[in-house]
Length: 346
Image (cartoon, rainbow, N blue to C red; front, side, top):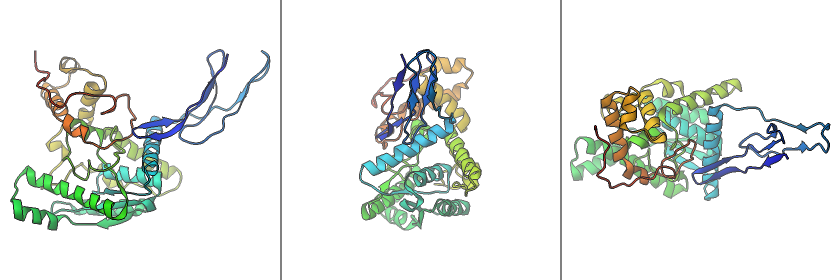
C-alpha cells in the first residue's frame, strides 16, 4: 500500500525540521514529494485500479549547500521570533564568520532587523573595518562603529594586564558592548563562532564570537563556512542581485586581530586539515590509533585531540545553534568536563 510521510518544517531550539513530505508507492518508488523549508500543499491522485494513472509532483533536488543554508536560516528565524524578538545584533569584524552570519540573519529576518557593530581595536586592519562596512551596506543592516580602546584602557588602568590576558580582555569587552546594546534596545545577540573553533576551544569565552542567545554556525565547520559563503554569493549572482558577502572577507586569511600580524594558523593547523581530523575524531569517533593509521601527522593529531578534550567546559557554555550534521556538540556528544583520561600513545 502507498505510504505518505508528512513532516513539519520549522525550528525548535537546536532542531530544524525540513518539511520534504513525500509519498511512496506500493512498489517503493517516490511518487510525489514536496520541497523543503516552505509551506506546500502536496496533491496525489490514488489510482483505484491497477491500470489507473498516478498523478503527483516531484520536488526538484537541491544541493547540500542549499539545504544546510536553508536549515540555518529557518532555525535562526524561528528561534528569534518564537522567543519574542524581532531583531538581532552581532559583532561584524570584516571576517568570514561574522559576514556569513550577518547574511543569514538578513535572509532570516530582513536586513533592516540586523544590527552590525564593528568594534575596532588598535590592531584592527583598515581592510577589516572597510569589509565590515561593506557587508552592512550589501545586506541593508544598521551599521555602527564602537571603538573598544577607551574601555580596554580603563581596565588596564586598574589591572595592568599583559600577554594573552590583554588579548582576551579586548575580546570580552566586545561581548559586553553587544550585551549592553541588547539590553538597551531589545535585540537578540547572536554568536558567529563556527564548529571548528568550538571543537578546539579557539575562542575567548564570553567574547563577541561566543556570547548571546543563538549561534547559527555552531554546527558548521570552517571549511563549510567558506563553501556556504560562496554558494550564497553565487545564488545572488544568478538572481541578478548584489552579492551579500564581500569577496575580501572570503579570500583573506582569518585572524582574530588581537595582536600584530596574528592569523588563526598561528594557533591551529590549516583549516582543511583541521576539519578533516575533527570530522574523523568527533563525528566518526575515530581514536588516535585510527587517525595515525589513516596517515595524519602525529603532532597534528596529538594537538587536535588535546584541544578538543580540554575545551569541553567552553562548549557547555555556548549558545544553542541549529543541528545540521550527523553529530552536533551538546545534544549528540556528551562527555564529562572533569576527566583525567587522555588518549595517549600506546
